[in-house]
Image (cartoon, rainbow, N blue to C red; front, side, top):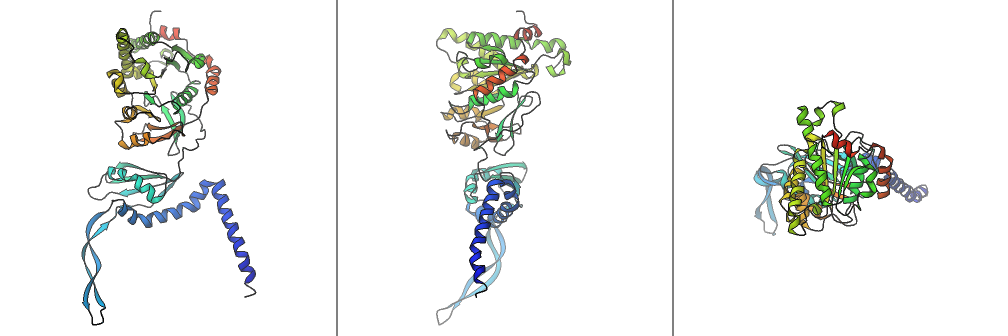
Length: 437
């Protein structure tokens, strides 16, 4: 006993040092801690508890199986019940087959084989139940082949803090933030040419426009601004803008100029500008629209014809602009069918959808209504204390939560002045399109 007393006294110190070491490991290098220690324990626990979790979430099916059962046989004089074990067919709860979970940077993913009669929507409906059962931040459901689904699990919200990542160097591609999966949030105009960016005040909508401008400023593209707030949003970036419209009449003139360049490809017999020789190819144009609703709001009937011209021109650009190197990025606080059929038609042509926190459910429905219904629920759940968080319809056909980098207005202004020498002259652009001045 005396020999073991020092060892017993030292045991609490050893345990405390071990706990401190594990805490420091997790605190200062969480990635290696997750892959080396936490993930193996988590994966074993997930596989071991899957039957109970599936049963609790209603994902099991009754099947006939041979099973050992216990039935009463007789009661003896002492009152003891004798039982008999029999092996017979009974109805048992069968769980879906789960493969072994694989680690990701922010959690894990696992493939599940569906039972008869199940569809991916059955798992999407209980995604929140699965998240609470496993004690994780979120569970997302996707399916890449019939009969199987993939559960993508994030343990903690990766959008609490978004670090800068290297920008894209490709033409018309801008890295504006990070997706909830940890990947880059990329706005690629070559894949998705037209975007709608909806969000209330202080939701991060303007910050996203700043991030987009900073990413496009060093690229050989022309930027055109539509700012019907009197120019308060885009005037500070005027050195990098080839044209800026601050009134409805100026917007109408600029739209007419943009439509005029469409004759360039028809004259050359090309289907789009990218089929033209490099020396004869017009510069791509990205149109940034702030407060889309201002283009459609009618104060009196005298504005009806002008609004109709603007609506028709903007819709034509959305329908045909990609072939002629014209791309739209339309932002607004409220985007609804109340603004007229022109907005609804424009929305149908904009396959890129971004929805920040909004003040009314109709704007979220207008922006994301034709996507997964769970995307609407996620958009309405965005808290006000997380500006920049948005629901994004991604290029891969799925929707994601994402958060844009914080780009102060001074940073965007500095980028506009730094790359002002790259700004194409609007008169030259009009001349290229053979538009008479």
